[in-house]
Structure formats: structure tokens, C-alpha cells
Image 1 (cartoon, rainbow, N blue to C red):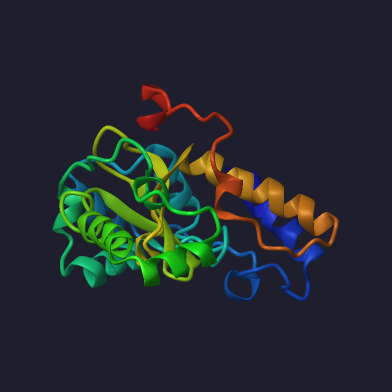
Image 2: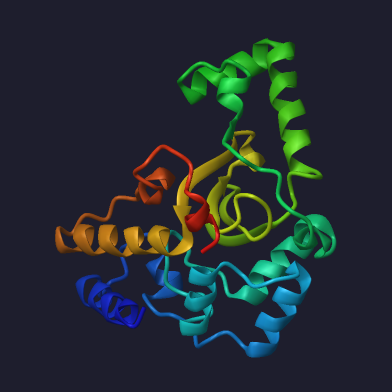
Length: 231
């Protein structure tokens, strides 16, 4: 874990003008360690410890440099839950998520997004399919056990499941744009380390393109093992 700060320092050297997406916000820096009282409050809400690799990260740095706009401080993650759901009670319940809910497949969408938009405008039944799935997954029980950790942009964000069978796994929430919920097949630290390695490589080549969200997902399409889920 200690090597993370040295890798971030190398990123900063390679990108002094902060051309990498999100670098102007996080500036390749981690915050100080999470406040013990905040950590204890969050874990009391959850009814147990946060996933261990994410917990260790917070003890190193309470958010800061990371994919896209950076990793949220724990306080901000909790605040976002309150903003979305009105309180923090969703953290006390197990997430029922077990696999990706891709609205494109559920509603038989065309592969191109512009074609999807045209079809939605012309076909009320197709538009209703998207709307019904979006409404379903925005509400209970699908909001349970979700801790927002990173903002992607355009309404999308990454979240960590902190309770339930898929505890410790990272997911992508595209509900705001009616896309669905996508299982990244990774725990937090592999997800973060893929970002470190990918960004260091791209900065060495002076490639400032913005990677797609799935870039930092797992390489194995199978679900994580029980041991990985308990991290």
C-alpha cells in the first residue's frame, strides 16, 4: 500500500500540466487518513467492517487521486447517500445484486446509442421498458448496501457493495442515463491498482485519452470467488 504514494508522485512528474482527466481536481494526491470517528460511524451504520482492502486504503488516504474525478472521502460518500435516498438507512441492508442489469439487453436495444434514442422517441413501448427498469433499480431493495466511491461523470458513478453476497465488489451505476448496473468483477484494490498501472503507462506515452469505465474491471468474466468477496 505504501507504494501508492510513490506511483502517484511519478504520475505527477509525468503530467505537470494536469492534462489527464480529473487530474486538475485530485492533482495526484491522497488526502490524510480517514478520521477514526468517521470510520467508526460508517461501520456502525453498516453493522460490520468495511471491506478490508477499501478500509486499508482509507487508512492510507481518505480519498483523493483515483480514476476519473478521484476517490471520494468517506464523508462525501455518506453525504451522497443522504442526498440520493434521504437518509443512511440503505447501508443497514444487504444488497441483493448478483449480476449485471443491462437495460440494453433487457429491452433489446440497438447497439448504437443514437439508434436507441431514435427508437425510444418513436416506440412508446420501448421507451416504457427503459423507464420501468430505471424506476425499479433506483428504489428498494436495489439501493441497499451501495457506497458511492467515485464519480465517473454524466450521471454515472462507481459504488462498492458493503453488505450482501457480493460484498467487497465494485460496480458501475448508469441508472441516471437508463443504462443499468454493471458488475466490474473486481474488488476495490485490484480496481485501483489497474488505474495506477494504466495511467502510468499512458502518461509515459503522453496519451491523455479517457479510458472507458470497463478498463479497470476484472479480466475474468466469472464472478469473484467467495474469498475475494469477503476482502
